[in-house]
Image (tube, rainbow, N blue to C red; front, side, top):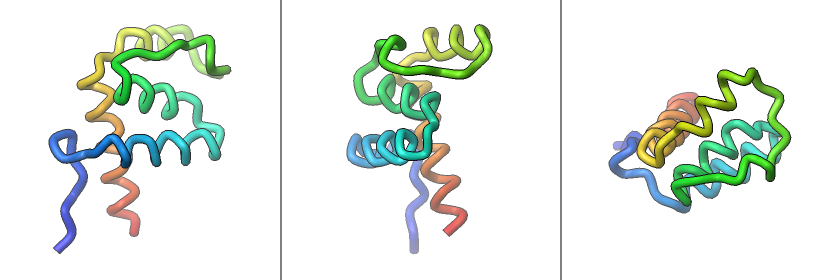
Length: 82
């Protein structure tokens, strides 16, 4: 039986792996979310994000708990795909 990744059981190692995959794929938004999940904050100047001002504001306002939940959701979706 496979365990689904959730915000309650996700590990920092899984978040770091997701961050690395996101960077390789050019998904800076997911990488930012992973940084927030790991560190509780992010320096947005480290990234070139092609997103609306609203999305940038959403990322800046994201809490660590929200970021962890978002990462768990992304990992769980990937797990479901096989």
